[in-house]
Image 1 (cartoon, helix red, strand yellow):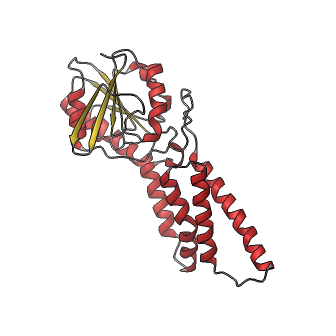
Image 2: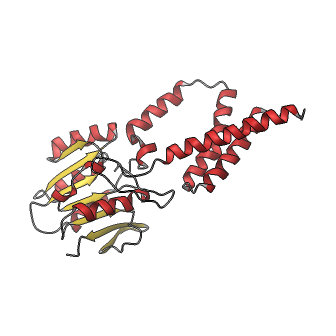
Image 3: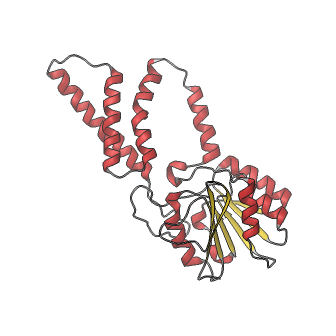
Length: 271
């Protein structure tokens, strides 16, 4: 499952305009942190030279820059995983160049990651794979009435939609996906299993036409998603989230398909 964002880094939510990702861009902050730490280190290195101190190897300066960038990221309240990135980014880059490694494996890896995960730097949502047990739980949570309209926000490779279409063929299913490879796979599976998959951004979807919305996104997205859900979805409709609760909003029901995993359900205005 794949798709979008809300603010893990700082708690400012942002209103979600239709068709526009309402979430902040921590990647921009990360770039600014790297540039600021780099500028400080360049100045420090010049002063070091002027004072005729013993020259330090490039890897030492890279490690100092990494430590400074990590401290700055912590000061600006960036998420923990960003701290890890700042800590290893420049030292890994310097080591790579010092060992004269070929560049094509890195380009190939980047292209593959982009095809699978899409613009995660912008959306803050990688592609998740929902387990079959979770898909079965979702099918059991669907209301018994037929002709429900259901959507999977960030449907990934189409695993949940395929299971739902098989177990509850009396309903209509849609998916939306913004990463190239998962979209292609889920679109093909949808042609075979009888559901529709569209390319796009979940924030541009009108949730008001659906009875059930399923999401497997990230903690970053949940506050903004809840704002969108409350604004657009009809009373009595359902929001189902795999793994990620909505901060400060108690679910109507919680199901654990396996130890350590939860599926959360909210009924709008209670059912």
